Length: 243
Image 1 (cartoon, helix red, strand yellow):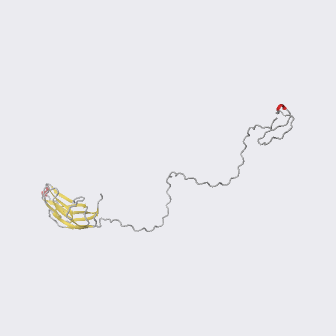
Image 2 (cartoon, one colour):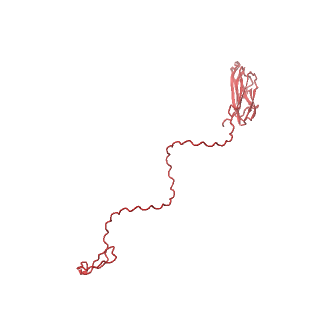
Image 3 (tube, one colour):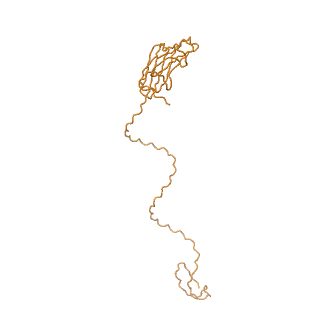
């Protein structure tokens, strides 16, 4: 007997009467009998079906974690200048600053016109009022000075402040010396002696201009201060020099 098999069959096919059944045992005539069959080979894949309708939008998903910062980009082009903003409110008045001293604020010049043949001692003094404790005094002498009638000789002119010579940064003086031909020379020359002095107290300061022996040890000789011209002592209060 033989079987007609189908993958979808759930029950045996109807039996039919046939005259002969070559596949039956012995080739006898009989009825087709339902039997279990071996599946045939798969067929070729069919063609793609038509595109279906667009589905409805899905729900919004949850926000993912923040990603890492990206690299800094290159500098962009300069933008167009914006319009001016509104004028701001006036600020509060600031604190008073530290007083500053301009050179023209406090100075004095003392002048006299006469010759002085003194070889040693005070020639002239000038009183000055210093306004600040942390400033310096700038002084200079301008006039005619000379020594005469000597060989290998020296005289020194110098400033004092309240009777003492300056110690910071040092003495303010000038020394004049003659050698060999001094016995025959009488040099009346205009001279200039100038300097600054620190650490002088605030208030009245007596500035003196003196003549005397040189620190070299030479003996006193014939000195002369002033000769047919003005002598000037200039005093000026100035800020201290930088360190």
